[in-house]
Amino acid sequence: MRKKKKFIIKKTPNPIWGLVLIFAVAFGFLLYYNAINKESLVIKYSEFLNLSEKNEIAKIHVQDQYVQGKLKSGKNFETYIIPSEKLWNNLKANNVEIKVSPLDSQSWGAYLLFSFLPLLLLLGFIFFRQSSAGGGGAGKIFSVGKSKAKYFSPNTVNVLFKDVAGVEEAKEDLKDIIEFLKNPKKFERLGAKVPKGVLLSGAPGTGKTLLAKAVAGEANCPFFSISGSDFVEVFVGVGAARVRDLFAQAKKSAPCIVFIDEIDAVGRQRGIGLGGGNDEREQTLNQLLSEMDGFTTEHGQIIVVAATNRPDVLDKALLRPGRFDRIVEVPYPDVNSREKILEVHVKKVKLNESVDLKKIARGTPGFTGADLENLINESALLASKAEKDSVDVECFEKARDKIVLGAERKSLALTEKDKLRTSYHESGHTLLNVLLPDTDTFHKVTIIPRGRTLGVSWSMPEGDKVSASKSELLSEIKVLLGGFLAEEIQFNEHATGVSNDIERATKIARLMVARYGMSDKLGSITYDDTKEHPYLGRDIQQSRQHSDHTAQKVDDEAERIIKTCYAQAEALLLENKDKLDLLANMLLEKEVLHSKEVYELLGLPPVKSHSLG
Image (cartoon, rainbow, N blue to C red; front, side):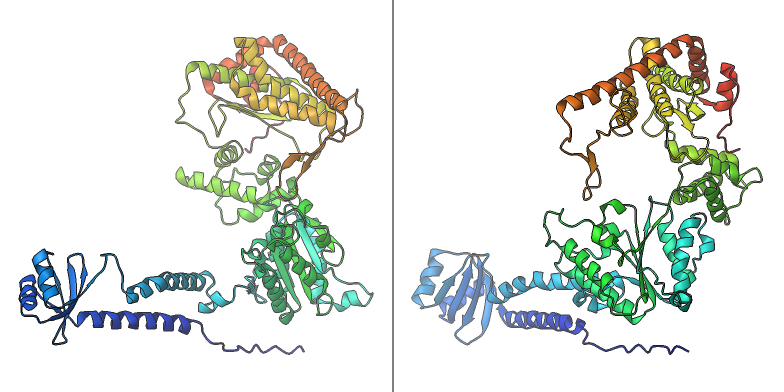
């Protein structure tokens, strides 16, 4: 049986007494200074004149009209005077010592007070800020290098694998860690070693942090949780000190799990910051690399689990075997996983009998676990506002539209001309979407302003889409040009609202030529030199690796694809001009048309709808 460790708490001097002493000395000085100044008589100006004539004044200190003085009897006095030549002559005749100072002159006591007051206020601010930040008391001000990791003792994490729906492959990879922590001899008998580190990689909202919590709950061992940004500090050396302290605490609680969320905040590739190799972030990373590779405990006693949605920017040394031995991909949930996730999140929601979670899962391709949770919450909010007894399909439809398209802008007043133009624009997209092959399934079209758009023609893939063929990309370009063409055909001009469609169509055409090798003339060679900067986290244009002549050929080929799609889409719209007019007029009347209504209106055979009902 393993003996429980006894934790001895060492008492250290509390720094609060130093601050109390400083404030006490300053306060005592103020009391003493004020007491000295108050031991003086306040006399009237007439009395001052009488004392002057009787030669009873020894010396005075004049500041404008304010006078402090001392009588020959030894008493101090103060008064206000009206300076005059007769008064000065009288004082001079009686040999009175006269000192004159500007009005804003301060005594040494006041000067000392105002010199130390900002410092006292600063110390007090730092003390109270540190005290309230972490619940650790006044000692926080002197423990800036201490780790900010939250410690969870065994049996305090209630999240288990059954609470994490989907991501079965990721859970299977993480079960190895749990099995080792529970039964290490099972692996050691054949010489196997558990990974020192596991990196959870995936898009935001896919459940990386939830998986880490589930590992802690299943393993039933001490768990340290910290964010990568908690290591970064403006003071040099603090980040590295916090890393050392974190692993020092972990070694005392081994075997345990250390979870670092958003590790890309501290683990980015070295040598790309403005500070070169000596900036604070890189020192912190160097210390993290040293700690992960140099555990003084037995192998497998400390397991590091980290999460990031930017594995491409992490330093290569961090990802090598011996540090993060295993990279677990946490993908977007497929349709079956989405259904399981919905089942988890609807447990506390009162659903209507008409709600089919399978249909909701099919109608939400590309949604992450966080998106699905938000969908259910938005649906419940809409049902509550409408004072319904339960959350029905209509609430889910409205919630999905709000999340994907944005909230309706009912207050935006459009002119009849703008509505007509928008109606033809969206009808152009819709008509090409239903007529062309290899397009995503049409769902609905609306001319009610949503988000930043005046109207939307919405289509979604039938299943989970992982790639696109050349014919599908060409059809997508034609659908994007549909709004532009419909406005040109009907009004012989187009408005500025087509800019985003043209931009997206041009980008697809260039990617087909420069990255996907889908050009008949240029062949299967990549000419795309756009790189993603690992520090900025966005695309930047690198120096070209091909000649200007080749670049011109890429531009010409992209232009050819756009013009070909333009001509084919225009011919199809002109051929079906009656359908375009019919659709635009009906959309102008109803403002929203669903797929079933559109197919019936155009006399086309219906297809499978993305309706949630």
